[in-house]
Image (cartoon, rainbow, N blue to C red; front, side, top):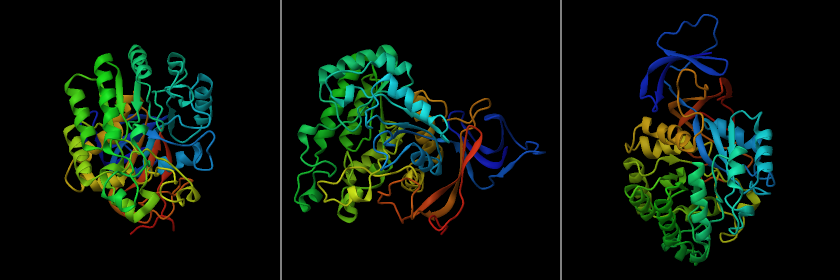
Length: 428
């Protein structure tokens, strides 16, 4: 296969030029101008960008145990249609992914999926916050990180021990930073909006107090730590402080936290409810500044499928979370690149190069000899998604006009997604 005449963007090697790519046996064989195309399958990428396959380090595929919401197959189909060639599943499945047997079973079931689906290990057994998992065995079994995402860790003594052990393993721990003791209702920011709903909600201090604790521990131990789905401006400031103090700390943000505010809960109801909640416009702007300054290195979707019945419950009882894999690139492109905040090259770094590098995954680059994990995107195309490939449909972006459409996703040298216009995804 040869990809011809595309604008190849690879932040890892500072490539940004119109050039051809030849793929053979799942690998990138050549990157040069005017490759001879005799006898090869050709993809004409004229006027399109050709980038490393996107990498999402934070998805919930609900498999095993909650497959009425999503499973490995439907989650994968959702991912590849969004240009992703690698994702990391979180551990809050049923049962939790907290031991060697479950981790190995995950990889056996993921072997034939159209993209690389990695898994983390839970940090504590059954998310119980009382006993650490066998960190050493779980890393050997293939876990790429540790996190109890979904259930914030309150046992500070245990977290300190976990960081010390993770440091020896050179493993990353990712933290969901919300103190449950400070939250009265999950998923809604404590603000004028929550006052209008006659509830208290979740205050900023619930996030920032835990971030401060974990950054202090990261400075103390030298452990590699990622702060998941940052939502507050002060949280960005705390991460920036940690970096200045020498902490080996990274931060991720979701497309929804950089594009929406808590006011959306009044329009979209439970479709705009997530943990941590959407915050103020001031918080959103500080997050974007944190991206520009390099404090935030990763964009991750926190793809969180729920059924229509679950999301139709009243606001305080409905589960938190939205899906995001199929809209992630477009939302970020519109809110960061088209607004002039960052370049398209920087966006690819945030969505592919950085997450792969930080989590030690193969991918995030277009280089000879490496896996041919590639996305081809039409930045000029506008489109609407009326039905997602995900098993769930819980998104405030459903039916919206989006910019920047994924045309091809190539995983390990195979075309796993080709954009075919259907009634469910019409060209504007």
